[in-house]
Image 1 (cartoon, rainbow, N blue to C red):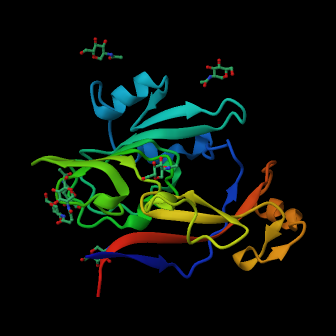
Image 2: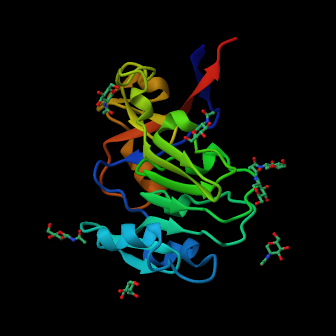
Length: 231
Ligand SMILES: *[C@@H]1O[C@H](CO)[C@@H](O)[C@H](O)[C@H]1NC(C)=O
Ligand SMILES: *[C@@H]1O[C@H](CO)[C@@H](O)[C@H](O)[C@H]1NC(C)=O
Ligand SMILES: *[C@@H]1O[C@H](CO)[C@@H](O)[C@H](O)[C@H]1NC(C)=O
Ligand SMILES: *[C@@H]1O[C@H](CO)[C@@H](O)[C@H](O)[C@H]1NC(C)=O
Ligand SMILES: *[C@@H]1O[C@H](CO)[C@@H](O)[C@H](O)[C@H]1NC(C)=O
Ligand SMILES: *[C@@H]1O[C@H](CO)[C@@H](O)[C@H](O)[C@H]1NC(C)=O
Ligand SMILES: *[C@@H]1O[C@H](CO)[C@@H](O)[C@H](O)[C@H]1NC(C)=O
């Protein structure tokens, strides 16, 4: 039998959710795209995704310009065949839909690498790695001798068919990458567990983020839900 287990990470993560804006990277921030030689190969999964979504190939990335903000975001990342043994920080690519890490001697891959990757719906890995968050975080998984496919990220807010459970009152649950979900305070609530009501001290937050113009809510904590063996 399996049981739901909640792992709560100690660190408080502050993220601004502003509805539609999903691109945060600017053109000068796409160093990840040049971290390894070559470009996305014609005919590869990321290439096909990119051409079909009207993106632009730049090094190992598929880039897309956000219409309203003008920011450039990474929607696809192909760092296959890069001889990578360690993959730790892919945060520049957190807006990705597709990531290919296949054909690398990666020794371990933490689920935390994909925390916040809420749009990720296609991951290709060396076959000896497991899908981020485990099979339960994906609609479909496949493995052959060369690679593993993890397809269709499951909304962690909805694993039991109920929405938003585990987020406290006055807060909303939203997907925050494979197996992760985030609770953000509903309008007019803020503070620890969204217990305080009233206008949020927005000036401070705007100061930290410097120049963001839309603020609806603030993320208080991020939790990971995974299947665990019942004791
Ligand atoms: C990609 O490959 C296809 C088929 O091999 C070819 O027709 C097409 O011109 C190539 N595209 C680019 C941009 O190289
Ligand atoms: C930008 O917006 C216009 C109009 O809303 C749309 O026609 C165009 O396809 C968009 N461009 C991109 C790259 O999404
Ligand atoms: C791959 O990386 C390892 C170190 O991580 C290095 O020893 C090896 O020479 C590299 N292989 C190639 C083909 O670059
Ligand atoms: C997967 O296999 C590669 C060799 O192909 C090895 O370097 C790596 O450590 C293995 N990773 C795991 C998690 O076993
Ligand atoms: C990867 O595995 C090595 C050795 O097993 C360990 O020292 C290291 O902390 C692991 N890294 C991560 C990110 O889990
Ligand atoms: C996860 O899915 C793969 C491929 O569908 C399968 O081979 C593997 O046994 C599954 N792992 C677990 C722990 O269920
Ligand atoms: C939540 O789960 C139910 C049942 O599994 C499903 O019908 C529904 O579409 C899911 N909703 C979302 C937003 O994923």
